[in-house]
Length: 438
Ligand SMILES: Cc1cc2nc3c(=O)[nH]c(=O)nc-3n(C[C@H](O)[C@H](O)[C@H](O)COP(=O)(O)OP(=O)(O)OC[C@H]3O[C@@H](n4cnc5c(N)ncnc54)[C@H](O)[C@@H]3O)c2cc1C
Image (cartoon, rainbow, N blue to C red; front, side):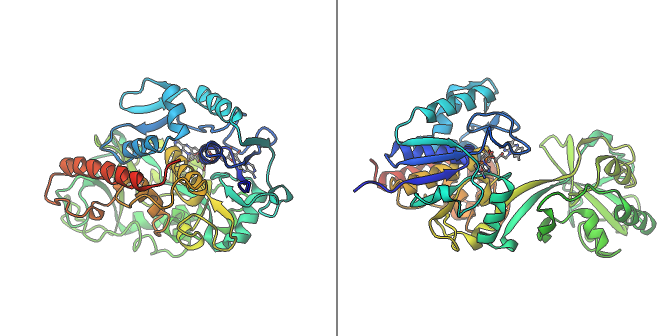
């Protein structure tokens, strides 16, 4: 009996990895990629597995979550990792690649594979006649999946369970903050230096809220009307909801005492350090749709930020992803549309490698080369387990130590990381040995 064919929509990081794993396992696979017929707003090369922004696949340190993930992907013979090693350029402890070479090598690798057909065509619906011959379909169309396909996915996933945007808070250069006005300290812990606080009196707060309400905003684009994500509302939308909303929300002053007055201010803007050296600070809760000049003008009304230099302005960019715990089975199959599986950023993961890892797992799983999820104590397991939990952001480096039975919680953070790395690799290898290999 011949093996049923599988279609993959989207030849990005996840789709290319999934298609490779299926084809090398002998599964007849067709990869539909819309480029060069149509390009998303971020893609501009014709090749597969295009890295749209940075050329870095981040740290190779096996004590970091992302380094561990690399090790585990290599154990599973990930093509993304193989090609990345071949096209790497020097970048210290990080794995960076020549972006063009990487995409060209990935395209050539996939084009010469048996069992794999690459069709340059946009799939516009989950009911597209082109998909009819296939027993299963992997949707790996990315955070910028083409609009008609997104609309069709919305129908299958349910409007409220498909999100369309990512909200980014502005980052300020620490040196440009007026330290005569701002003070360090986290809530109830003035000695901790993780947060920098800009105190506002009632008058300053009221002026800021009015400015936020009246500030010029970037016009909503296609699909953005359907946003329902209270976890990261734009700051000006919160201001619209009521004059005191911010004072009880991201600007609440509770637990923060201004050392200059010895009192709790009326409201407080908090900035969280972006890096270990605290050279850049992230404005907590200030994700925004205000235009860049308006951000500059309005945020400089905040005491301490009058002369702030912005390393990055706030923004909201399109990022299509589903509410994975609700709409997907643990095998990443759409509950409302059996036979349709999701991989890549559209599942809710973020980052090149994390996206590729979901494609790797799904490709191997649908090819029958592995039969279960990796244990949650491994980086790959934690990543996949994340798809079944409600948290939006996933950082493999934040893998919960609590998942590791017997791990000494009193050990230093560094030792715990080492122990974790050792345990995770161990658990992963044990799991792998128990899996059927062809
Ligand atoms: C602007 C931007 C910058 C980013 N910068 C970084 C970064 O610096 N570092 C990082 O780690 N991550 C970054 N990311 C996240 C990163 O892009 C993703 O994590 C990763 O590329 C997602 O992989 P994917 O396979 O899910 O989607 P993609 O890599 O986007 O691949 C999706 C593919 O599907 C194709 N496609 C879309 N719709 C259809 C259709 N209907 N029919 C056929 N084909 C279709 C697209 O052309 C594309 O080739 C960025 C994302 C964006 C949008």
